[in-house]
Length: 154
Image (tube, rainbow, N blue to C red; front, side):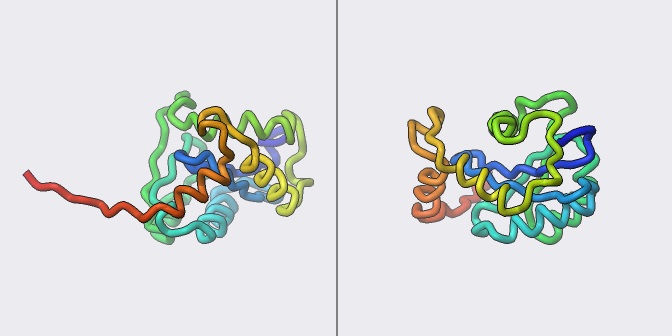
């Protein structure tokens, strides 16, 4: 959220690789704007990565059913006041403060600037990834054959 909660950037963080995508929300972060921004960004992902989305309790995801219908993604909501349930995203939001300090009007940043910041974050080695970058971790993940879902019956 930007200054006086009038502007925002949505963050999508892939949990295994910490790969980050930033969603430009120009001028408002209503549920419809967030839905449209998320859908446009999610559609750029390989299908195997678009399985689930974990969100906080904000009203900006009031259109979650439409997102699920359009993407077939299951959407989960964290318990109120439980940011640790989305730890990778909270950590990424902290890193974003290096680029966009509290009180910044986020609406002045273009989609191109957000892409530059996401690229810098994705090219930054992470201790949690054994010293490789999120971009390298994503490349490794995508080069692995997709594991089939095995159903068991009792």
